[in-house]
Amino acid sequence: WFNQYIRHFAGANVDLQTGLLKAIAYSIHVVGRIWKERSLCSDDRIRDVALVELAAYKRLLSLVDSEWLNDTTFHSLDEENVTTVGRKVLSSSLKAFYSTPDNDDEGIKPTSNMYAVSGIWCTLSLLTMGDIDRIVEI
Image 1 (cartoon, rainbow, N blue to C red):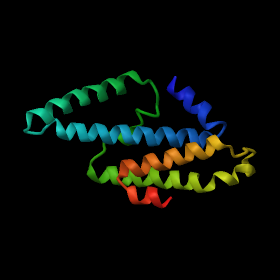
Image 2: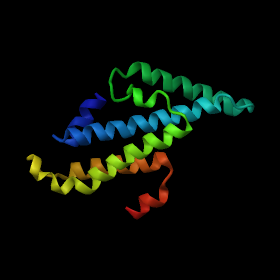
Image 3: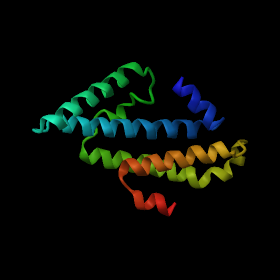
Image 4: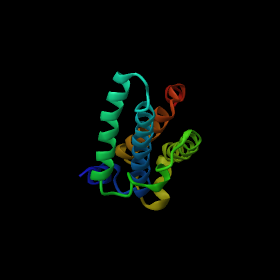
């Protein structure tokens, strides 16, 4: 149902649909990586919460039968890859955010939903990367 909602929300623009799903997947995998690191913590309280969240993350991965969440790009996120992948997702989101009004050449009329989707995609990418100042700037 989630993919269908995104398709409906993003309209006919497949790039917006794919981009938003990629930003959501990126965020989910980064959070999963954080919980994995915290599951090794020596503090019992932090480790116990992390193990519960990590189990939820793994259930989510196993329940979602879609390429968008199980994209192999996200399976080997180490500290360097998180930044590299994040920059790619962010770059695509900014391109979509600033180019949405000019989609007439593809026969796609810009709608308020298209602006919203590109804005959500951009904001989610920036939040995941921790770039709060840039969100305010945009």
